Structures are given as structure tokens and as C-alpha cells.
Length: 169
Image (tube, rainbow, N blue to C red; front, side, top):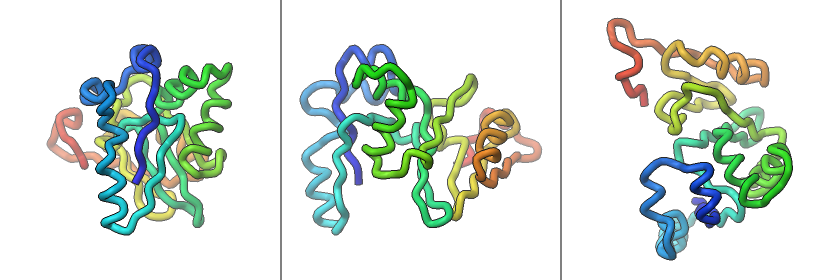
């Protein structure tokens, strides 16, 4: 389990997550609740408190490939970290995010672009060993980006259904 890092209000204003996060900005921060520690202990799971990374669940997809963990992350989540740390480059922020998530920096893949919803997990799903499924035909640039980095990407399309109104997952 992970608990998100606290970020400055100004950073969240500049790089807003989805509306659900706005209910959690005060001292009773929803993303760092005390009960998460008790849940982790009860389930026998480790708990990792993130120091500089704050992502909505749908802004990040993780999996394993070639025996190594990887993370696909929305660019806005890395930009939040960049603003919080006040570092010059997105690469510096990406390095910090990878450390925070406990993965090798070369296994953090930043996904950006117009038209991708905030919640990538409603349009993409990780399968074993670096395989991904993307719902619909409108994500060719992302598919190509991931294929170039060694992922096997399949597109799912529902015959007879208007793709934009179907939540694949």
C-alpha cells in the first residue's frame, strides 16, 4: 500500500487532480489517513509513504515486465512533483518520482498528450509481462510510444458500440 505525499496548495491549484481530491486538502488528508497503516498491518502488507509523489489512482498504471516493476504515469503527476520540488527539468522530477515509487528510473514512462482522460485506468489495463490493452482506436500516439519502449499493446474495440461511452474496465 502507498500513501500519497502532501503537496502545497499552490501546486495542486496549478496541476489539479480530479475533483475527488479537493475534499482532502486539509489536515485530515484523505491520501495519508492514519487508518491505512492499521489496514496494512492487519493484512500483513508493507506501507510506503511517498515523499514527493501525489497521483490519483487513475494517473498511474503499474506492472511487471522482464522481472522488473514499471510504472506508466500521467505527465501532470510528474509536473506536480516538479513544482513541489521547484526543480528545473521534468527529468529531475521523474528521477524523484521513480525513487519515491521504488523503481528504476528507466522503468518510469511518462504519458502525456491531448485527449487522454485523467483516469488512464478507464482506458488502459496492464497485463502480465509488459502487455497492455488500450480501449479504443483514438490512442495511436500512446500505443506507438509504448511499442517503441518494448511494450506489447493491443487495442480493444467493441463492435456496434459507440466507443467513447463504454468504460472498458
